[in-house]
Amino acid sequence: MKEQIEKALDKVRPMLAADGGNVELVEVTDDGVVKLKLQGSCGCCPMSSMTLKNGIEKILRQEVPGIKEVIAL
Image 1 (tube, rainbow, N blue to C red):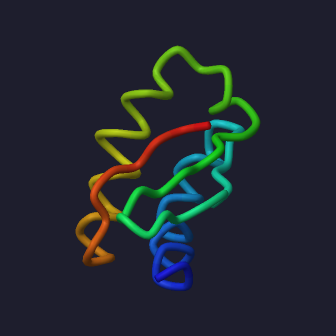
Image 2 (image 1 turned 90 degrees about the vertical axis):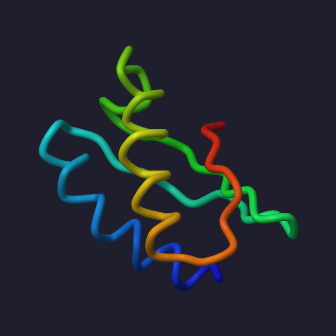
């Protein structure tokens, strides 16, 4: 599952990089929770929660079956 998540994150990274940010996969739990760390400008952006839920989580759920939730650390 981690490999599928990394491939899906590679689709998101160019958009984040355009704003000076990135995302790191920290952990995938057995119950389908993906833990990410937003980096660079994305880590301190006031819109980061929207980016996480409306952007990254949406794409990961479409690309990788079994994901229940995406959270930022």
